[in-house]
Length: 174
Image (tube, rainbow, N blue to C red; front, top):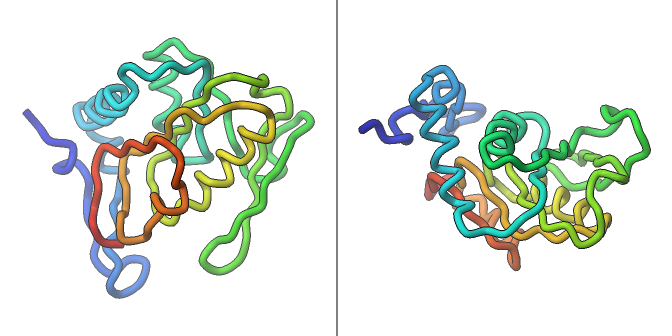
C-alpha cells in the first residue's frame, strides 16, 4: 500500500537556501494519494464530538471540503480580509514579514458549537491561532485542529498550546 509521504514532493532550497518546501500538489494530482490524505485526516477525527468544520483559505479549503462532505458536517470558510460578502469579524496576526487579516462571517458559528479547524499545514501556527481566536470570538469551541503536514521545527504546536492537535505527517525541520 502506498504511503502518503511518498506522494509529497520535497523541494530543497525553496523559497530560500536551507528550506525544504513540502509540495502538496503532488498529493492532489494523485487520486490514490488524495484519497489517502482525506482518509488519514478522517482517522484523526475518530471519536471527536463536533458540530461544524472550519477551514482556512486557501489550501485548508482543499482538505476541509471533502472531509466535511464525508463526515456530513457543515463547512465554514475562514477567508482573507475582504472576501466574504456579509458582516464579518476579523483577526490580524503576524507573518514573518508583516501582518495579515482573516475573517469569518459573524453568523457562521453559533455560541457553544464545537468546531474542528482544518488546514494543510502547521508551520508557525499563526494562521491557525488567529482562526481559533475568530471561532472563540463567536462563542464556538475549537475541539480539534487537524492538518496534513506539521513542520515541527517552526514550533507552531507551542503557539497552539491548549488545543488538541493532530497532523498526519510531521517533519522535524522547517
